[in-house]
Image (cartoon, rainbow, N blue to C red):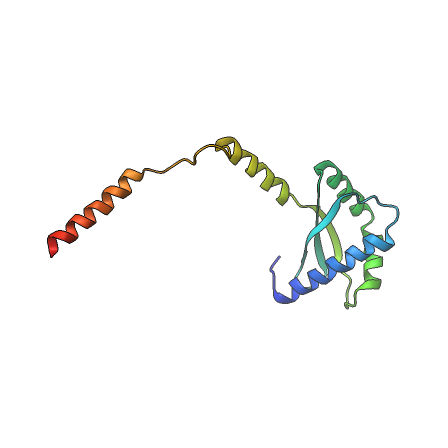
Length: 141
């Protein structure tokens, strides 16, 4: 979805209102250690993708499924908290960004452990190039 200043601002307001709905209005859904990482709103403000992340991937995915089932009820409560002409349809999704970053970080630690020396690129080529420039500079004077 195309991000504009307006959709970003509405997304932030939706995120804040959804947090309040989760805290005060939803009593039957166990959210655990999940949080809303981002809300992307369509340009016409009729649809919103809500990205959920959590400490444990399995728990977060179960929470997303429960939120998808209760999307109509959440939208009803959301409509009471926000003041828009149209309350957007909510699409709850699991945000894999944190898990991808963790996987990349572990792969990097496997390749280059923290205690070892970093892998150097050919330093000799650079020193030769610098030396050649210095010698050519002396010849011109």
